[in-house]
Length: 315
Image (cartoon, rainbow, N blue to C red; front, side, top):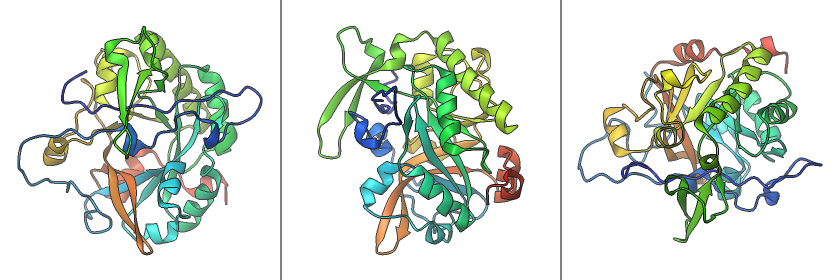
């Protein structure tokens, strides 16, 4: 892995064949703040996007900013998010974690999906792909939880999936998770035991099912560091069935130039540039992952292929 790449990890999935999993069933359930480590550069520069980004003031009008959310955020703030209040902070869209693997459902998804709809924020859902289940079963899990198309197209999270450390773990699959208390946990990326062609095939099965069901081009979330290590081919030569790319890059260099590192041959639409954006929430400031689209909200909705709530018949 590139020495300047963030060391990241996925979430370990505790499998259950008989019933949906809860957060408590996961052996090591890591938040994205723990999954991603920031790259430290020596340059002393002013950033186009502030290093300590805060809503609403840093969310400039000519761009569209949004957040993604899972039970980790609720656990961290120990609060119930008031999405109406969040909607007043220049947060224009939200992606909620819905599922992981074939059985896990995020316990916060259902309540937050309804609240976000009532707050009038564009919303979507994402699935964390794991190599331990078939893509067909994983799509069915996502569909069972989300219950139908949402305004924003479904997103597939394809990145490190942290499994137990083992002797035959490849060097480039060995990852470290730095906990908030300073402890370092060593894990092995489960994708390290899967051929790149098989990874692409699994992702394509899920993406194709999503497009067939919703009629929307799905979004693929990934990072250049993981892609270079596990796929090792340019985006446009990989065979991936994804037109909409959501790239994760938290580096200072990315913020300075507003050109995040992305896989060769790719053109990103959304950029997740921080895991620590401050969102005022009552007397607290909640820390969330924040993403940017370089255009106004009307342009964002057109580019991502958003549908109206009326067209989906949910409310």
